[in-house]
Image (cartoon, rainbow, N blue to C red; front, side):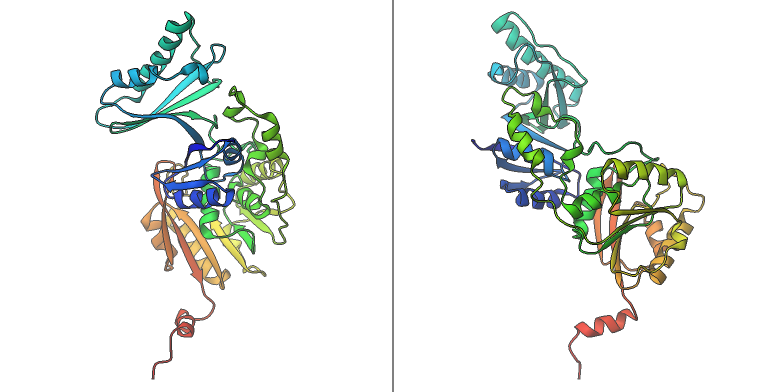
Length: 389
């Protein structure tokens, strides 16, 4: 199978993690960009990228890259493509435009121009035109314009890859599955010890943790990918990828998921069962105030409320309590917390050893690592430092 270029889109802050995932999959020519990673591979790699990557939102296959100063130039360049190799008249299509440019203010206008070029191409050649369908088209095209550089791509994913397919229901402000997986991979945890989310909401972090621990591909829950409607779709190849569980592994620890809301507990339970990871996740209604020192070594990864879409009467008090519980009931372990407000982090009153900027939706958040040493931190540091005479 011949090799071609692809682009995996992701969230800002997860590019490095995605590049590591692509390396592990066996992709070539990996290059990190802004909210994306470019790579090369064959059709099998494209299917695997959609099926296996935890931190990709969509996989694009570029058709043409060109320079254009205005919408008319875009039209001419798009019309010059041999469209019968990509689309047939029986298939519906849609165009998604992403524009970062002074010259092109309106992404909607760019979409119309691309659509017109394709329709005119077929009309002039055959007298017929393919149909545009905005929801669930057979072929989804993506045009990306950065200043005057335009890239037209086929979207091989369709619905965003964060929609894994296991989520039955969500609480208010659920964590995006791709962001959840990215957070866990950023901590370096792959199932080596217990995993705890003391404020688990609808269970996204615990579910993604279980899939990572057992190395279950996130694509197993998906109903379909856009490439299944392409004319060169190879069902046997996808079937072989789908049925290959040779990379899955044993997980000998536990994942603990707590939330103080009985409603969140019920939703999380449904989602955990739907994802088939109920045997790995211990789910319980419990407030963080009741958190006790775990018996085994563990890592905490959690996304507490920020007071943006979720209102808590005493947001700062909540973070103060988180800091207090970590200090008194999590010594010898590591906690990672995603939050939004500096004043919330201040209330934790612990020194973070790492701070990673991440976006949760439009909110610029930070993912902070807290190492909770037993005994005095000074004693701990003293072990590493040479004797001073």
